[in-house]
Length: 86
Length: 475
Image (cartoon, rainbow over all chains, first blue to last red; front, side, top):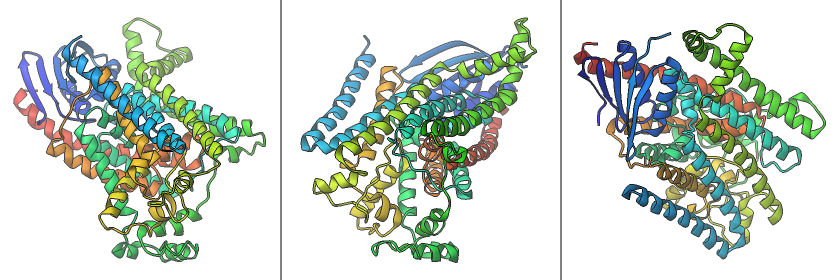
């Protein structure tokens, strides 16, 4: 399945990187968040567990807030709200 | 308990029962197979730890360069310090199975090639094994690519002989190897016997020239060889990637943001940030040190130095090298057993691949069913699968064409890097650095450089794809 990035609504975006292994999910997440405005949300769908660890660390560093985390059968759905950059 | 959890628990039982059965059946065949069982269960512990901590050497510097995440680099430094502390004791009491490798420019070049490969595949050699345990199809392709590339590289001659400097050829031929080994034919043979074997070996314990074995091991190998370089690398990571955001957070919270105490808090915060990775590093480090101790203990118990001697006592001669040995490192290793099983398959298919140094003189190609190092890797996959199943993270994933392409290309680069460096991220870097071997950091420097180049390439590649997707989103 190919990577998918789309606008879900005003200030809300979806990044689907299901099937991708490292470093693709974290790279695409970083690129998407860089382009988005402060306060925008990004829903990330992925199924590579180690990418989750990297995305969580990345958000911890940048200050972005992970507002929702769900896991179902090895598939993860996280929502990240972009914070103001340092 | 839901249906998925119940199924996962059944699979966990199946995996553990199968590995236990291997231990019991082989022990009933002959007590010497306790040797195989020791490798197997240490492999299982490695697999569980790697999956629990998402412990991948590839991500250490790749994620640092790609997304500014230091957690894995920190985890690896913790694991190496602990492995070093445990194995310094093992070394000082004369129970180490480790031998330093020749060091030189080849270590850096090998690390560079390996580093690029591991970024393309998405996992290092050990990381691909644990990801295979998570059901990741890409990881199986990576393992296959590493294995096949090494098995071919070990024996390929023909036109590659023209790439060998005359001095290597002359030196290789002059080594006077057994008649069955044609050291003057094949690029890898001439590289090994004509170049690498002529290079020096040393450890930091030897460099500090302390006569007391405990002081030599702890001051030389651990303090000089691991702790100081690791602390410096972590300091560099803090200053370049962590400091700015750490101070920004403190300012937002109205906390002091200047002074040494603040930076020490930031440095420690970086180290303690990922609990899972730190715990995995701790368990891996201790287990790897104990593994060495246990293997040496079994060698002493049976009065041998290599499993090949036990095979001969059991009347098994197929796959033994000219020296009567098989690959038996006595510690955690990944890539050579991968080359061996493909080498064994090639041999069964009619490829006469026992006239080279790699298989024919040193490592042999024993039947994978009785190859202790092979069972270490199989059990590593099993241990990772158990941990993934226990946390509901197991998922079969077939590789897409795009990822399959990167797996094959990257795996081939990792295979080439492994043979040139005499090991992978585990054998040539993690183990050697932890044992104070001077070649370890050289491979590591190359690997970091390779990770940087790989990230630069993937940044370019993903930028193009992302730009296309974003074009429709008014960003």
